[in-house]
Length: 160
Image (cartoon, rainbow, N blue to C red; front, side, top):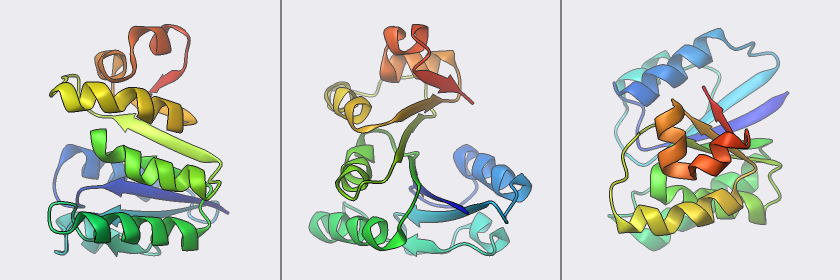
């Protein structure tokens, strides 16, 4: 069984959450197990539909950054995941670094937006690219803005 840990802010009613819910509903659950880390303490709308998965509610970095990092690291260390798939933009550095440290073979960074928000993201994305084994995007623009046109041209970014 391939164990995949998806990391996102919450499992509520947004587009990323609905995409993951659709994947979850159609994946062969004998072959793949989806677990989730969310940065919220409330139960999101989509959580109610997810069975046979563990949903880890970790402390948001805005509440306590040290606890946030510690909890993410603990989940990744203890989960023995094959893939850590991040859906969280610039904050993907923390779980990707932990996944690399714990020798998770698949480390995915997934861009869901075709806009650059600011200098912080411009500075973090080269690090995210270096920590990732795979780059994913929801479209060509989202991939080229986040990971660069070269990564797209050289087929290093998969459009899903």
